[in-house]
Length: 133
Ligand code: HEC
Image 1 (spheres, rainbow, N blue to C red):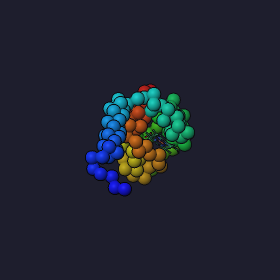
Image 2: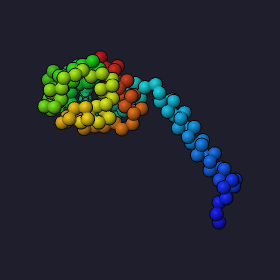
Image 3: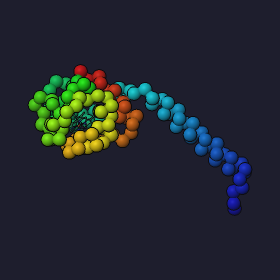
Image 4: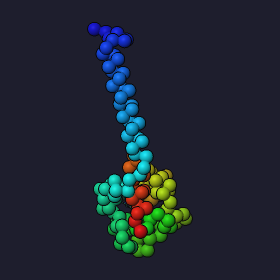
């Protein structure tokens, strides 16, 4: 049996597809404001195993205390790759966002391999990192 254009079933399919689009738009709008609390949960799940957030405690990676505004690759006592060790910039929210999307694109040769593909999730994590003093 072929579905006729304009049949009730066809119209219902369009309404469903359209409703899904509106739902996505609403979700995107809801994600517009970065959420440091959600970012903290992601950090604990994805980053905390390698990064401390207080003082100069070094795990596999450097402490991220005060990371926003800090010079890249210069935490005292941390062991860095040659690539990050010779970096010559400070971490801004925009740099952190780009680094977390693709670390090697910002610092070719870095040993940091974890990527966060979802832009909203990255924005949340960067908002959380900005709370670390
Ligand atoms: C498997 C361990 C590991 C995980 C998990 C990890 N990192 Fe890293 N991270 C590192 C290492 C090692 C470095 C140092 C890289 C280098 O020297 O090239 C680093 C470096 C960094 C730096 C640069 C620090 C500086 O002093 O310049 C930032 C920012 C960072 N990581 C953020 C994160 C965030 C946010 C997450 C979670 C999404 C994360 N990392 C997950 C190991 C990890």
